[in-house]
Length: 337
Ligand code: PMV
Image 1 (cartoon, helix red, strand yellow):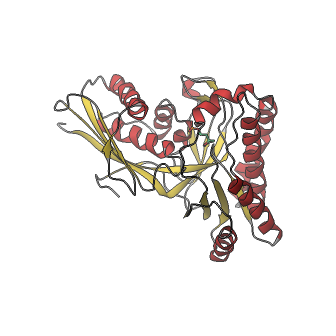
Image 2 (cartoon, rainbow, N blue to C red):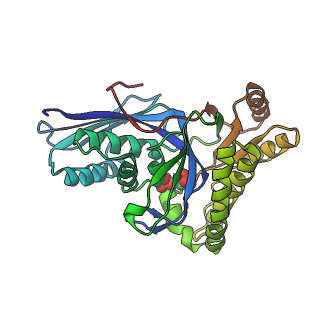
Image 3 (cartoon, helix red, strand yellow):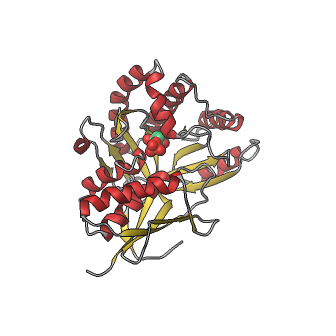
């Protein structure tokens, strides 16, 4: 084997029940199980090459609107920390060149760390001839520090298990990508980098007095969500994902210091989705740690048109992207979007 090079593609994902707070920050062990849907078009393609010819590690990142460019600072450091972890496992000390490209514009509020760290871990481990099982790959991805990336290893509908042991906290597929044609309408209300990162939010979670009740109610909620996905029951799923979103944001707003991610447009979208339901449109809102709203609905052009029409008059909406359920992380040819 003369070439230590591999490319991988990994999906972004939207959590139905959210990871919020850690029992162990160094090992990224979550306080609760979380369940997500892997997305189709929102993904990251990453190529990693290890070679004696590189005098230092290089990290190049781009997206659908910006060509790949060399990055420095904390973004580069997080990538290199993951490379380093994998190099130790492979007993390999060669420097690497990482070229990573998102299929979507970065910096508009779509989380890119899930797809980015899943693609990085798969490409780097393959380049180093560390052929992990999908379960082990999800554990190695988790150790990069982005918990949501753990779930991006699998396609379709995915659960990430909590554990107090590193080997016990991994992702697993609940149903594959052809099981249920759900859609995620991502309504972007802010193009600004958020003031409070999810890492900051996880750190502050234990300061909210609602943490205990959230963890308690999540057990029953996760069971309902698993069953709703199995039964393709959009109403049962929708009710729980909205509750979970409000529960996470309630914790963020009541942590020390409080974190308020919502913008006026966020609130207007949440009201509009609720109102549309009273007209028979089965659509439900969820949000990550930011002001953007993800509207979940079963694939249907009438529903999509009704949602788009309802979003149109709301001031402050920057962009709408609709995506479906996608495949998990996989090794691919070296091509860019
Ligand atoms: O993966 P992180 O550390 O960026 O945290 C993700 C946090 C949420 O997006 C709010 C929830 C989740 O489970 O994806």
